[in-house]
View 1 (tube, one colour):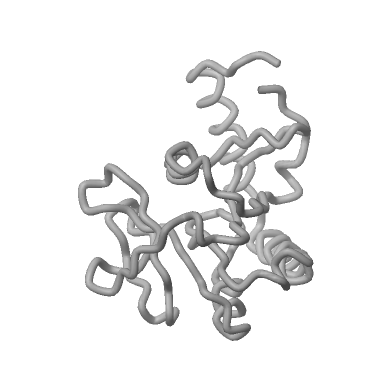
View 2: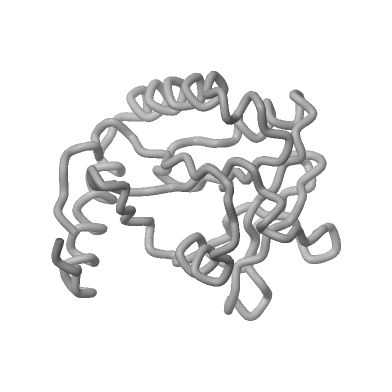
Amino acid sequence: MRTLNSKSKADLRRHYLEKQKQLEPAARKRDSAIIRQRVLRHPAWQDATTVLVYVSYGAEVDTHQILTEALQQKKRLIVPCVSKEGSMTLLSQLHRISDLAPGFFKNILEPPPGKREIVDPIEVEVALIPGVAFDRQGGRLGPGRGAFRSHSAQHDECSSLGIGVLRPSASETFTP
């Protein structure tokens, strides 16, 4: 397996992000609904009490309904948020969807600093991980923010199950 240099990673990311943007709104909605159903039916999700779900933005698979359903299922819902300096990703518990506000990075919704309850990543049982592409070995090409990559690198002791979230249009094989 070869290592991607930053240029080839950037080219692949650009390719898959462009494919996402070209999808019709109806296809995006359909894909998000299918993925939501699969996540909510997953045995690990059903058994988990503490779940980490990214807050979608742009052309990403929409997770807003998953966030709402997690709260309705009385799960302890954890979302990523960015420090004011933008230097690190934190995890915060979310009690209400209405607690989300535009964040420091690209105005992605997150709990504002005054409403954050920082959570140790080791407490997460299931994590939904955004990807623009995955390879057959589980290698992930993320959207380029580095939030999940830097977070998982700092917390190797985490034993949570990561569920990669990916549109069917990005499921073609790529070689890292």
